Image 1 (cartoon, rainbow, N blue to C red):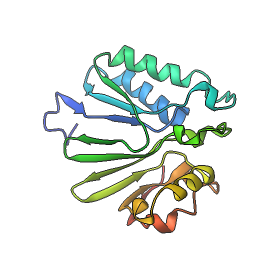
Image 2: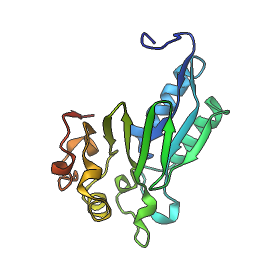
Image 3: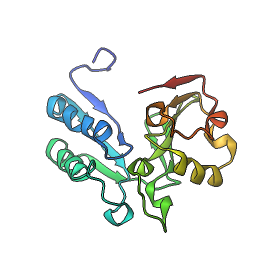
Image 4: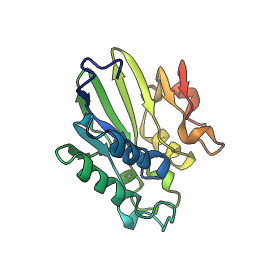
Length: 183
């Protein structure tokens, strides 16, 4: 609120949801319940896989539907964009490039829902931030085969999956960030 040009009219250009696990998507639901009358969200960007793409994940049950319901309830006029690998979005002075979505896992079931995490970069005024959700080794292998090393270079990295040992260590030397956000 202190940083908003108009503290009485806060506008978020886009809210990105990497995947539907509670510690990612449900944060939005709680935020919307508390602040939807005070904060406008213009666009939501996510890429949830179809149910046929993943094995039953009881931790996930209802989370995608709950996210869609919360958007419709609290932000009915917001645009909803289903992201796809390779898309570029321009939001104010930010360039966003979608690097990975679950659709890249064609032909194989997603047995670990973190592999459905959307990966994207945001570049603002020459500073590149890489958002990796909760990706692990499986996604890192797919991305490593798709992109040149330069794609992963970033100034700021959101550490995948809270930094646990299943994180995509193969990509870290290519990322080489100056700063790491460890959720």
